[in-house]
Length: 222
Ligand SMILES: Cc1cc2nc3c(=O)[nH]c(=O)nc-3n(C[C@H](O)[C@H](O)[C@H](O)COP(=O)(O)OP(=O)(O)OC[C@H]3O[C@@H](n4cnc5c(N)ncnc54)[C@H](O)[C@@H]3O)c2cc1C
Image 1 (tube, rainbow, N blue to C red):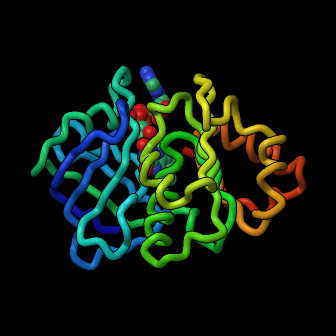
Image 2: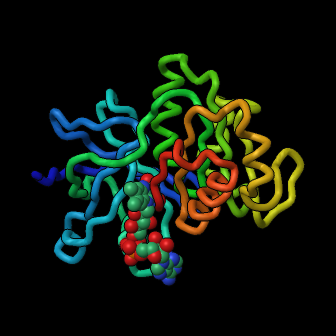
């Protein structure tokens, strides 16, 4: 597996703690919407520190895009990514990942776990194939919702936001409970896509098992 060195084109803020990083795309590089790659920063200190990140760009785009939640108090790769400027270099590897689109269904995301779904929804929007899909998106606060406007634009009322730390009109409050999943499932029981932090994924999987649908789930833990 060859590593590829790509130059950073732009770094923009998406939310208060989330970055959008656009890079060059190597000639012939390919991936499927929903897939990820191992990424490292190409400098002497960090070039061996590979971390998985998901493409939010489309396979046909002539650049690559990543949306990265950063952990500034923690001296890790995401904190270093905050220092990136155009022309800095990243090292990426081949694409991989469990989440790919298998047909309309219910997407369940927590925080940065929405990234594989961003590329999938962008692809479906391009193909005018969004119908029949629904997203339940769990975050702490409204300010944490990644690409809220864009996702709402794609999905309208089929985007259900759940906030654990804030009560706001138009947003459900709390966590993704079995009760909420039961409400959402009857019309969307063909395909389930689950991606988020391990505690959220575990809780959702348990609820799905209780509801008798876990074997149809596709899960990636962040
Ligand atoms: C297949 C896959 C795809 C992914 N895609 C994305 C993506 O598209 N976007 C994205 O944002 N993330 C994504 N992730 C998660 C991402 O890989 C991690 O957030 C990243 O590796 C963290 O690297 P780090 O060096 O900053 O932290 P590490 O040193 O690797 O620490 C790992 C984790 O520990 C926690 N942690 C440790 N110490 C602290 C601290 N002091 N404060 C806060 N948290 C702490 C954080 O949750 C952190 O994620 C993906 C993960 C997987 C498995």
